[in-house]
Length: 179
Image (tube, rainbow, N blue to C red; front, side):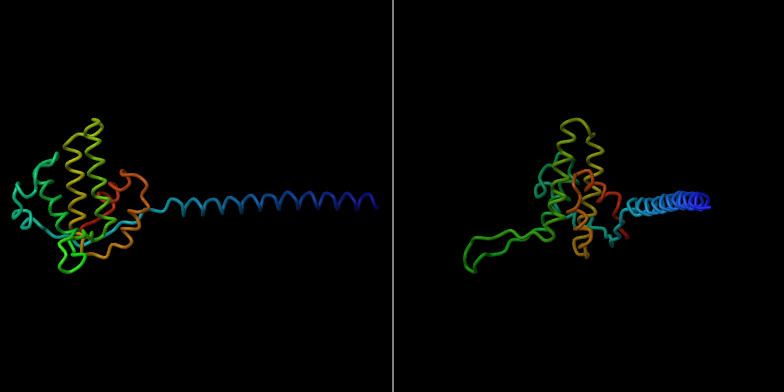
């Protein structure tokens, strides 16, 4: 009788061990599925009000804007970007020395780095001039339109981007300008 009850206990424990292992395995799979869903969440898209600034570009002459490797329109937009994002402030009243202040330096710096990256890509031959011009034109449009908008989250996203390609994607694919 003792042997029979001992065998029943062993068989019962073995059965419970296998079923609990199966439950643990299924629980682990559920946890993995939820982790995968959260890690592949879509990247945020930023919506900003857009406006046409063609009247401002018409006032800029080629002499004021200078030459640019990607054309006169890009040269004018780069000049306008410098005008809109930078200003000169006197250090001490009466002193002729001034200090350049950049409004939204994260965005301004990102645009400058993207321009430099596109120039290098064209020089290496990995990107055509037309593609680089189109990309920089779109980046400049976004930068000029969002100057007066609330861009805290956008600036955080720019700062967290680790490469220039990611910054270009951020400006060109993840920003909607609503006209």
